Image (cartoon, rainbow, N blue to C red; front, top):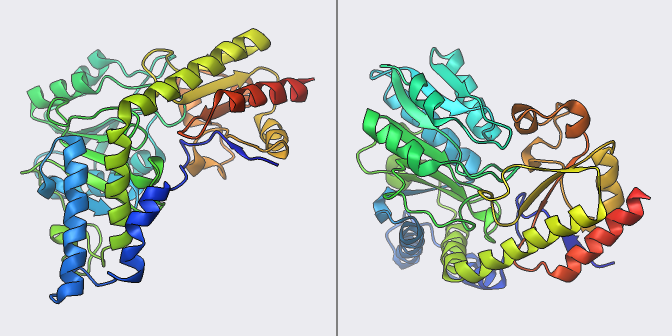
Length: 375
């Protein structure tokens, strides 16, 4: 049976050209980047190349790019690391109720240590209110952390406006851009972003490598002790092959950005139109305009999403009921709860996210399969 994969928000397959780029650093150039002989120097040069590739995409300096193991580690390092290093300036942080758990749980940890956190509400489409953000700022506010685009409903937040508010008040602004990188063009200078988290496996690099942008001059503490890698901010022997892969993947996805994202939007809009033609009791969640190009979050009324997922899987279709990081959590989605959905709607919600290898034929098969299952 052919597998039709519609869960690219959870992870993406590794591109062939990315695998080719990383293989030499597994087989031949296997040196530790911290040593002085040629194998080590070659590894260090490869890491620096990847750093430049990330910096080019984000429009920042390469020395402002740090490599991590994933987006969650980047979020932890940005939020906790900044809070610990700047607690003498204030103890208040502002975030939203629909953040990834890497952000929410980091904030909860800080609350246990004496920090105060404001969790902003969102409207029915998932947008924060800029006036509520501005009114939540106090003399003790040191950090605003709002995600670039939501991983479940695909809503894209007003990042530039948030950045302006933060910059005017002299507050550092961090954004979890894990879902945005590869799907949206990002200029950290234009958008007034001070820190940004990303993860390679969302744009066709392997799992296990991420990155964190930190604007020059912003101080943050390392959370992991050991060596002095990553400018003494993230101890641990560098994962050279995967860092190389991340650099190649981010460069490639932005080299083909316009065509890639036009295709995702076309697939997304075609799927939504076919859903509306064929099903009456459905609800599309999130904003229809300011949303990730490949995201469709849909609620089927009076349907058990878990049972639907199993039946889709039996027909070779991969989708999800929300964030892949929360699949073992029996509690209803905090994102869908925050936008005001009732438990009966939440229980019938699925997320479909498209990628470079999906076709209209795949979507036609998906629609046909859904119709059969519903009967």
